[in-house]
Image (tube, rainbow, N blue to C red):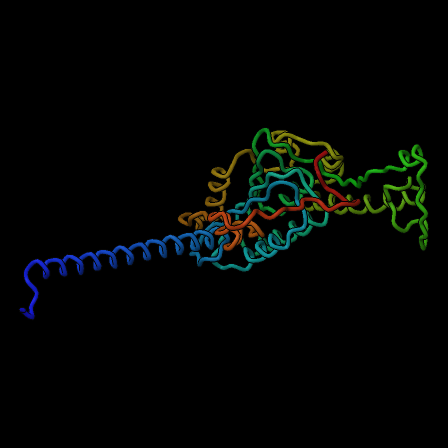
Length: 311
C-alpha cells in the first residue's frame, strides 16, 4: 500500500483546509464588525453626554419642561463655565418655570458662564416665570413673536382637605412647638398669623426676583411694575416692554453673536446635553439592546413648594 495520498484525497484535504480558512476569516470579520458597532455606540453615547474631547466651539444647551433641582444640570453648567474650548453659549429655553430654588441655582450657574464667555438666549414656545429667570442670565435675549413669557412672580400653593375631614368626622391631633410650625398643612386651615408668615416668605422671594429683572433688564419704577405683576406677554409685547432684546431664533442669535464677537465666526455649534439616569452610557446601551428598563423620573416632590411658574 502506498504511503502517499492520491489526488482525490489531496483535493479533499485542500478543500477542507480552505473551508476552515474561510470559516476563520468569517469569524474574524464578524468579530471586527461587532467590536466596531460596540465602539461606535459607546462613542456616540459619550459624545451625547459631552464626554469626548471637543475643539473650540459655540455650545448649545436646552432647558425645557418644569425646572426642578437637577445636580447633573448644575454640574454641566459649571463645566461650561470652566471649559476653555467653549467660546460662547446659546441657551434655548422652553419652560413654564419651576421651583424658586432650582430656578435660582440655574440662573446663578448661567451667570458664572456669562462671566467668562458670551451667552445669548433663545426662547421657544414658553419661557415664563422661572424660565424667564434663567433667561435673565443672558447678554442678549431673543424670543419668537408668539413666545409666551413674563409671569414674573412667586406662588405658594397647596391642597387642603380640612373641610372634607370635617364632613367625614375626622380630625388630627398635632403637638407643635408653636402655631407657626409645620404650616401650611393640608390637614388644617391657616391661622391669620401663619398666613402672614407665609406671605412674608413669598413677598421676600418676589422682591428678589423683581430685583433681578430690574438689574438685568435696566427697568425701574412704573416700567418695572408693569412687567412684574405676574402677567404674561407675547414675544412682541415683551420686546416692547424691555423684557427681551429682539425677535428671532437660533439663526438670528448666531448672527448677532458672531457680529458682536468676530472671533466666533468660524466656530461650529455643538450641543451639550444634561446627563441623567436615562442618558448615561450604560443606560443608553441598555435601552438600545433592550436589556434594561427605563428608569422613572420625579418632576415635583410632594408638599408645599415656593414655585415660580406660569399660571
